[in-house]
Image (cartoon, rainbow, N blue to C red; front, side):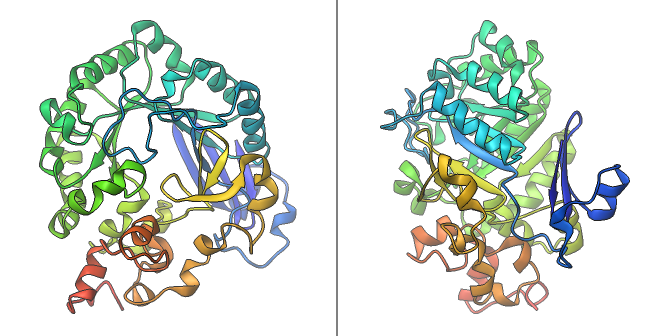
Length: 392
């Protein structure tokens, strides 16, 4: 699958799984004709023609009600899309040439038509992935999950530390669900929310993943969204932990031969260690790309720049017209670099990181435009001690 962009295009593969931004010459080498989007001298990767990935909550229903849930999962959203409306939303995303949809909740398996929705996504050319807790997975359900590109289980720790932020120790249930998925041949990984409390247990999670022969672990920063707002200031990773995180994940990834990923909100912690800018660009590493590369959609169809930001005031059914407007609902997110202040303004990683997580900025400082206050470089800047080799 491919999609034209002004710089060339984006190509996608499911086997092996990858998404690559390529230039115009590469698109020509694939035998593709020129696009009208190339009728411009601008070949920079800026505003895309559509998101590459959409995080779509199929329901807000959830019987688990974890303490740190960024969606405030529990009761259904008023106006939750029915099957027909959900399929119509998928049609829109497919017509825009979105590549992946990350389905979640709430607890997605508490929606009866989940597999009908996933199968329809496949029919439209979208690759559906899924994140669940594992609470409702049986051997029969696991076999049906082959419709997904990948299924990730939400596990924040091994054994008793599983309950660090989930309030209940259901590790054995999640562990059993992983066995069912692996037996069914479903590509399986782990999503781990990282906070101060469970940081020391990350090594055990890698060891467990190797034992279970899992694909990957994705580490997600605890966010001040939903019920996470009540925990964030106390449970966010510390300055010292934020500095240690990336080297620690690299160490365990090598030791256990498990792919470790970080979400976009951890990119400031990655950049602190001064990786070559050209390497990050080549790997399509990005910080805040809300309203451009990514979008979040609630189960009622309301859109946000990402799943951790407030509702942008538009519906998925208005998305095609709204997305392309440079002065529209996503302008503040997309144009942040133009308003950057120190230390971001002088940082070598400005165009990649883009100020870190602005959901965190909005919550902690009250100003979306502030640099991420938990970025180690921002912390050092505010303390009057700046890393001059990274900021120049």
